[in-house]
Image (cartoon, rainbow over all chains, first blue to last red; front, side, top):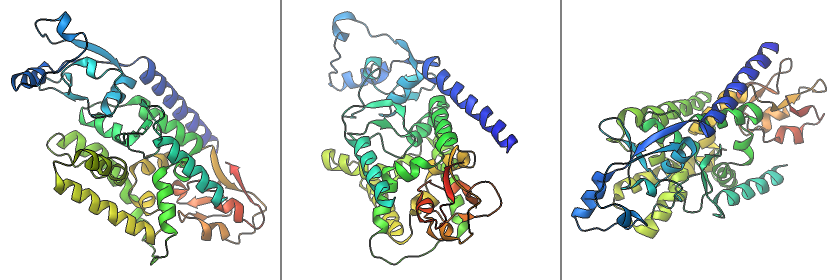
Length: 106
Length: 257
């Protein structure tokens, strides 16, 4: 019984520590998927993202730090994948389509 | 107790899918598809699979599941899981009832290791047949609604999902909580911690060893008179439904282990 309790305390402490670290301190660098953006533009589909056209004339790859809960949220609509070079990249053209986005896939 | 539990399960099923707010950055440890247009929380198995697909470990998801498992074990399976609730209702339908071999409960560990972890790591994106793509909860809450709203581009895959769903419905009508016992990967995760849970039915010295708890148990756990816990054999399966506590003639079962 005593060993069981010690084991319980150790595992529980690790779980709490892991949850707190993951929720508040762990971050991932996620990159834009401008390749997809360009493809969509080339076939004549215009994506209107507020502020995008007015601030940038040339599209460059941008990156942004995502907390783990933000990545979890993005994953609920399959928003992040690995690019060929191993970087985390958005499955959507712009990072602004991931952060804080509500999960409705439409 | 069973009526109370069904009401609580119904309340949770409504709460998880009522769409009042969306907190998809939090995983609640029950099997409830986050692709459902009105779901509130993210599904832990879906997130584990997605993270495995990009080679990451979701610490918050694993941590929350471990905390839930270590404190209340599979209590959420018995009282909060919407698909558990659906299975409870399905079992009430008059239909041929049957038993399943005891070893089949180990299949769910294989489902977790294979379809939730290994397939996303080694076969994604070439193979999309990981657990979410086959999950009966996902079929009910996501695949069918979206197929109705948007149509489907892959009728073969939808037919496969529907075939799996209907098979599980038929099996759940014949065997109580078939999916929970045999296939649920979340149940497999939580059952690992069940033996160490704080809230866990425990038998006291007033037990007359009549075995009624054993006969009533929906998860077919087996009691033992002289050891910790009501259920010494298969303790990982106990979902804390408390049917044993209610029906015990000597009131020998207490909740806190």
